[in-house]
Length: 108
Image 1 (cartoon, one colour):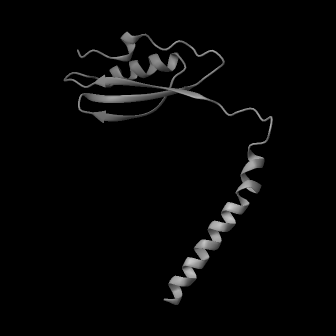
Image 2 (cartoon, rainbow, N blue to C red):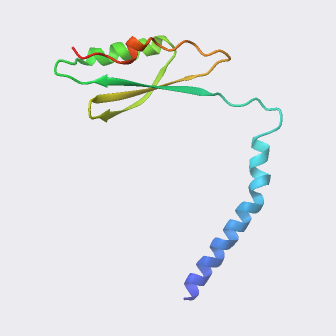
Image 3 (cartoon, helix red, strand yellow):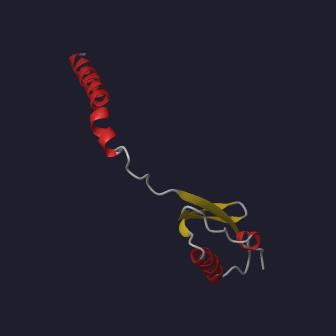
């Protein structure tokens, strides 16, 4: 019982210290007048997997997006194939996205 009380008091003191020091520690990191960090835009591309899909098909799609400034960040498998995820930093005027024809790869 005494151990539980000690743990509860230590936890409470830690929360109070964290809430008190939050403004001291976090605010200087967001100094007034500092430029904001980079912004990103994201794109997902459906890539159906069919019999006869070759690794070079993936490379071709990824290179097309890479040529337009998109960076591959990951993928996941869906019922119809794969979904590829890309990101790129947003400039003052974003570059045009790849054409819709390049976003969905038709099966062979």
